[in-house]
View 1 (cartoon, rainbow, N blue to C red):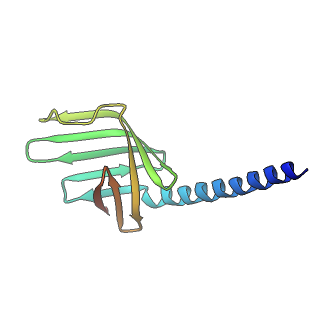
View 2 (view 1 turned 135 degrees about the vertical axis):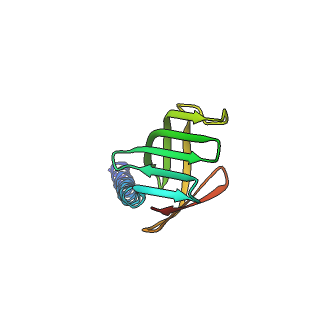
View 3 (view 1 turned 90 degrees about the horizontal axis):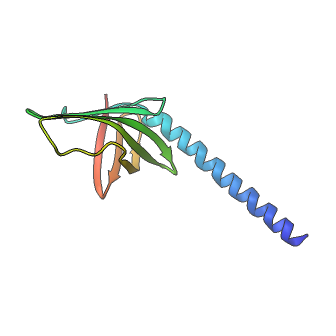
Amino acid sequence: PQHTMRFTLTFALLSLLFLGCSRRDAKLSEQITGTWTLNDKFETKLSADGSFVSHWALSNKSLTYQGTWKIQDGGMVSTLTNCIADGTTNFERVGSVDHFAIIRADSTGLVFSNNNQMISLTRK
């Protein structure tokens, strides 16, 4: 009886924790859906259906990435499904999975880090 009670209590607490995380992830997902820019050289569109398109353009080079994204445990996980490179051979491979720690997300800005590099985007 005591073992059953302990299991039930543990299961209930873990369920509440999971529900809290999934609600927080859903809210964060809504907050970051949209188009974000950086210095007129980079733009990314995070669509509500979980797809994204990111585009970098320099004077003689451009990169366009397409893929999927999701919020998981308060961070973003993206999977690259297509890459179009023009004028460069320095690009990420299709199938790559990246994990981003989201530092701040609000109506005007999105700040995240990837591999200890902070990136700050502005909502378009």
